[in-house]
Image (cartoon, rainbow, N blue to C red; front, side, top):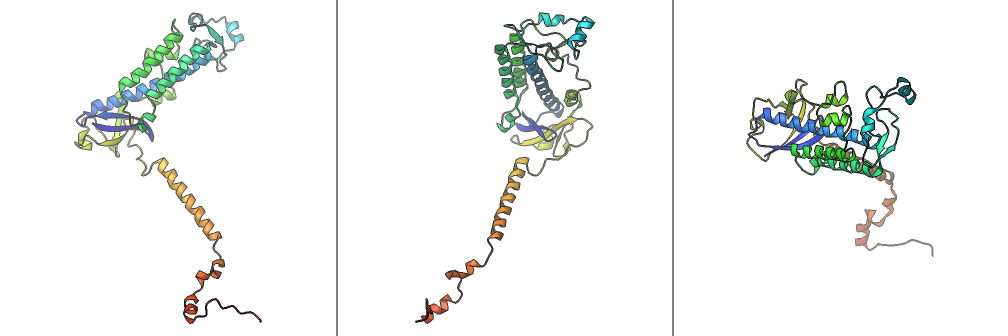
Length: 290
């Protein structure tokens, strides 16, 4: 199996294994699928952190309004009255005005936070350092855990306009957002390796050969963006170590310059006539008045 280290720009994403005989059409779609699924999980747990702190989403026509404006316009959060967290709620106002402030109690909040940490660990970028390959099953497992936590805390479900529910139902609208720019459609994805475009009409072995133990760094991006930046000759960590070495070396040379004086020339070992006087037998003669 060829080991692919997938990156977006200079940022590591995940490891993926694929046979050298893989069709690049299918492999590119697979990489994009895992990449986008990880982004979905990140968006969900980001909103779940807000859910644990401030409760469910307000209706779109009530978001950003003050209590006085809501009362004046006679608006009502009907879904907020139905979607009560297990064990009751604790009021914690959302200063941004996106959520209704009816947060879960401390026990339910910890259920959400613990599940988020477990999901993060499954699809963490640290898996690259641990040499763990990412699969779609692993990402789906993380998504299932997040979904299960929401069902435990909110057995009545979430409002249909809540971004968490919309993400789980694949109805999210990311148009005009930074999150939407990060998503790469499978049909528009393109893989690059060693400044070469891995054309979808070919096989992986056409580029990397038939050695199944090969490890390559591939970069995913939108089709038509051109070649991504080349990989640096040395990593950022190696560059830090190199700079640290040169800094220490400069400090050592600086100390040597400060200690560069002639006091050592008065030492016995620095006397260039010592050998001659030794053979003449005039060693250690001291002159002093009687």
